[in-house]
Structures are given as structure tokens and as C-alpha cells.
Length: 104
Image 1 (cartoon, rainbow, N blue to C red):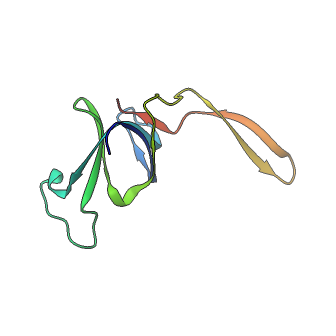
Image 2 (tube, rainbow, N blue to C red):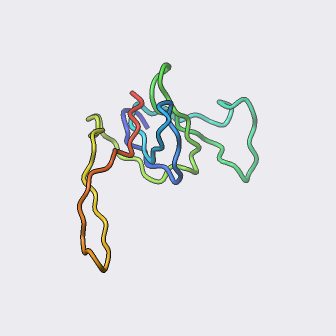
Image 3 (cartoon, rainbow, N blue to C red):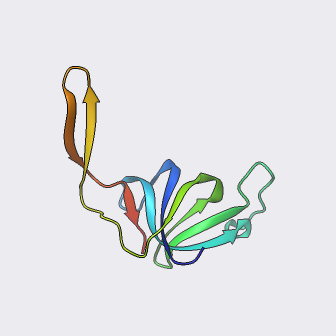
């Protein structure tokens, strides 16, 4: 992998701004488990993705990456339109904060 990717993770993570995110966008570098200074066993991920740059990055275990979408274009990080459905009220549109952390 080379270039910028939008990575969707299996689990939520907390970024330095204190908010929870489900995705991260930035420059990606794939590394082995030596990045953590320990050797993992067969039950753990043996590769990791570093997303971002030296000043702002997240390291994600390979087993936690659900989707990887190549995109040099920075994704929208403003509020996004979402919806919720219920039997009583039908479909309700609303705005919510983005779930994408911009690392680069």
C-alpha cells in the first residue's frame, strides 16, 4: 500500500481530540509487529498500518482493518447527514459529527 487511504476499523478508537472515531484517513505505511517492540504470537496480528505522519498518526493492527479505500482527496470532516427509522416516526434525517479522523 502506498498513498493515502480511508481506513475503516472494526472497533471505535479515541483520537487525541478525545472523540471516538471509526475511520482514519492519511498516508499509510505497512509494518511488521516489531514496531511495538515485542514479537506477537500466532493469535495476534503480525502486521500493522501506520496512518498519518510523524506528528499525527495512529497505528492499527491489521486484523482491525475492515475496509481500505484509496483516496488522495481528503474526505469530508464536517457534520454529515444521517438518518434513523422507527415505526412511530418513520425516517428521520439528522446531522451528526463525522466518524473520520484526519491523520495527515
